Amino acid sequence: MPKQFFGTDGIRGIPGTPPLDDRTLFAIGRALGDYLHDADRAANVLIGMDTRESGAHIAQILAAGLAKSGATVAFAGVITTPGIACLVRQNDFQAGVVISASHNPYHDNGVKLFSHAGMKFPDAVEEAIEANIARHLASGDLSDEKISSEVSAITLTPDESLDAEYLAFLRARVIQGASLTGFRIVLDCANGAAYKLGPELFRSFGAKVIAIGDAPDGRNINANCGSLHLENLQQRVIAEKAQLGVAFDGDADRAIFIADTGRIVNGDGILLAVARYLKMFNQLPGNRVVATSMSNLGLERILSNEGITLARTDVGDRYVLEEMLQSGSTLGGEQSGHIIFLNDSPAGDGLLTALKVASLVSFCGRLEHLVVGFKDYPQTIVNVKVRSKPPLDSIPEVAQALAEAETALGQNGRIVLRYSGTEPLARVMVEAEHDADVQRFSQSIAAALKSAIGA
Image 1: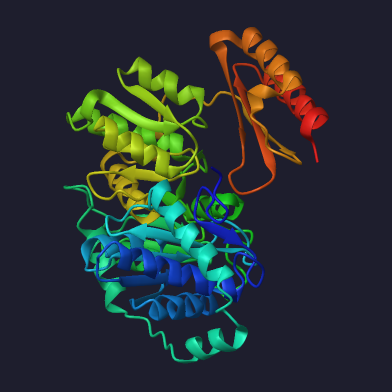
Image 2: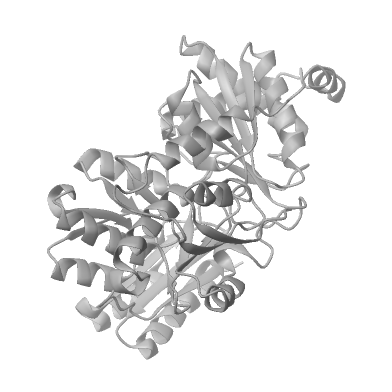
């Protein structure tokens, strides 16, 4: 059954409107506290946030709801999403809460929940929490006056020792033998959660850090910077004669890289580079890498040529992690730059990924050498706004357009057709050896979608 509040990456919305209005946020805090209490565990919860101007208010409301349910709350202040996942796992926290909308603009925000294992809660737990949210909202016990009274009793002061603990965790994960002394690196921190932690991490190794996107003002997170806006980073890497550039998103759970030539290397390229390294030292279990349906066919082909299997999952880091745990794989991730090093952490972590890649570049000299031979197949994604989301295979026009495209492409292309988990959109991804085929079939399938269920 579709969930009412949780999407593919937590609860998202516009602050001040459902589900991020004060009543619902207070109910979320209470519902999480209720779940932890019902599970017969001491409810000790860690809250962190990115740099959006709405974050502090949301944290205050959630903390008040948690306190009302009997939970105790610790506050990390501004910290990365994987930082919360790490700290919850390493300490006596039964859950972690991150207030972030990842790569979205500042006017969006969200609430992500993590279990004590440092992983997102499974669907069954999210459904139980949703039932509790609905129960509290229907109780009539959430008046503005009562919520205001509960909130006024809450004071959140960031515990700076948590930053130090997370950075110590990261420092211990540098690849043995790597030296970053004098390593020239440009970090685009997206005016987000990594704006302090990223530069501090690399400077602690003696790297020469040039930081951009490191002056958050509450509204400039992801604004023409970070992992979705790479032009400034490309120019700066070349101008500074840097060995590497790294772009994080707002909550730093992903990282996209720039080689010294200005070449963009996304999550697919990083999976290839790391898989090659691990296989060389017999540290890649089953010679297997896990990625999603969105990873480029070029990655699958080059890994296959090198004796490495690419297993694909649905889009979402939780599905990548589930497959890794089931199959015993230790490397997985997404094209968008979420990379999971399971021997280190079950969470995709942009800072951890940056540290690993910088280590590899320090060994071989250039990122280009790590991804030699990798060629992206032409790919496009077309978003179609829809008025409803019936099963895609139940729509005759769409099924016919899809069948025609798949028959024509054969083994020389791929098509992924899915609904967005957070927006009223259908996404059409087509990749093939020839761009003309990509454009032709993406448009024919998109036209069928518009005709049948377009908004």
